[in-house]
Amino acid sequence: MYRLDSRLHYSDPIFDTHTHGIDTDALDLLVEIEKTYGIEKSILICHSLGIKDYAEETYPSRFIYAKYFSGAFRFTHGVEPLLKEISTLKEEGYHLAKMQSAPMMRGRVKAGLDDLRMDEDEMARFFGAMKDEDIPFILHLSDPDTYYATKYTDKKQFSSKERDLQELEGVLKRHEDMKLQIAHFAAQPEIHRLDNLARWFDTYSNFNIDTSSARWISRELSKDPMIARTFIMKYADRLHFGTDCVAFTDDQSYYDGRHLALRLLFETEVRNEPLPFTDTDTVNTGGTFINGLNLPKSILDKIYWKNAMHFFSKFV
Image 1 (cartoon, rainbow, N blue to C red):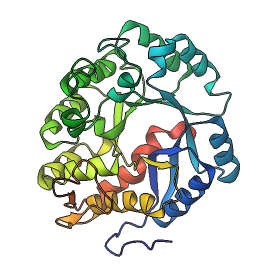
Image 2 (image 1 turned 90 degrees about the vertical axis):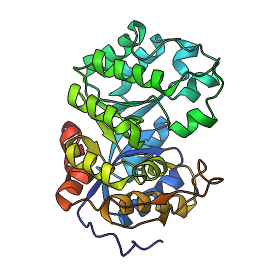
Image 3 (image 1 turned 45 degrees about the vertical axis):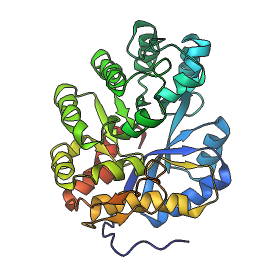
Image 4 (image 1 turned 60 degrees about the vertical axis):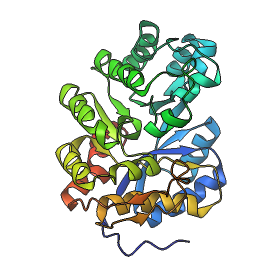
């Protein structure tokens, strides 16, 4: 088992608001490493009812459970099956819903660029069902700038990131009476996008963001730690710690590296610290390096624990 890096100084409980459960043995390993890093509660996005039942029996009171919805499914089956899934969500023991609706999901099923946008009338039925059942929603809708430059270059299949962010803002605007956690820093940890994210925070009060994924967030916020630190200090009440660890492998370094990266970023003032795992987006361009933000404990308390405990208070 990995030992906690001596440079990490935060010792109070941490709440990880973005983890995935797929394999039971891998979940056991994830929990073991989480405990090493002080994670006492997590949101577990369950890719099957079986993993939810296993986690509930094996780790009582540790997890809040989110039911996983594939963003590709709605293009092939429509909204009606989603409404049925929402109607049974609580009976199955889930607390939240989570949809992975990044552009790759549209690409998998060759959906048109404007087919069933998340901010349009038909998808409003899905959001309405969650609102009726008082179910919070975690949404992943856009991806790193690097993906748009490398993976999403086919303009017949994929649109621009600006267009996708407009769709995401449309969700915030249309569903202002719903509690939303927008994954991956609302797809805007890039330094040049923080001003737009600040505008969203100043305009819409219905959403918080999480700090997953460790690779993407560490890479982008480290590019200008002064700007990143100023932003986080201002909007600290709206941030939830999240690693985006997926319990699917027995590779301990996979889980350790993601916890270590984020905590080095937030707690320390390291400079040019190599990311403790491979960043496939930069592997051919010199790699990714962490420049720590050295956040004060009062801010870490909010990001690591208090914000999530307040946001999800009915489940904890």
